Length: 89
Image (cartoon, rainbow, N blue to C red):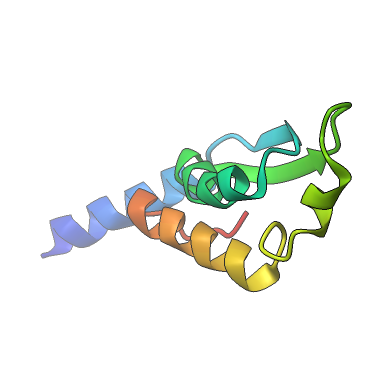
């Protein structure tokens, strides 16, 4: 029982003490971005900066699901659960 607790504590420390990964991302299609949040959280990305690209249609930034706080947090939380992480990007 104590060994399990020690292993969990070591796992949590290694995730929290890992490298800070930052991602500069050209704005993808809204559906693709929504699917990316889970993977980004699983990979341990801590900072995501989304920038317009030359060919990015302007209406992508107006998409309600693109950067909706509820949508992003839900997808990030799902990725964190799968990765065993506990620090929100």
